[in-house]
Length: 120
Image (cartoon, rainbow, N blue to C red; front, side, top):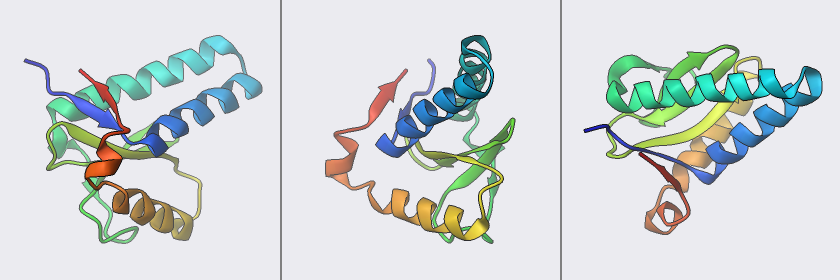
């Protein structure tokens, strides 16, 4: 049985923004490929939630970070299904990452979970 994951609304928006940016900078094929690789890594993380790294220098939240190209997948490793909080570009400043991650984590109440993209 495959472990499932959910994308927070912010993470789903991150994927759309990443795809649009890459399409504008390159082309549709490359944007599709990057999105596909990010989604493959999310599936990998759902099966192997311990694979990422704690980044206590970025946040005190119970989230791990996993690099894919120049992006960081931010996720909650202790959740079932695995909760993907956001997908950040690794060149963003640390302060922005910290604020955004804490903000995204704060919205994971039961009402917020009703609006998550559920993936198997």
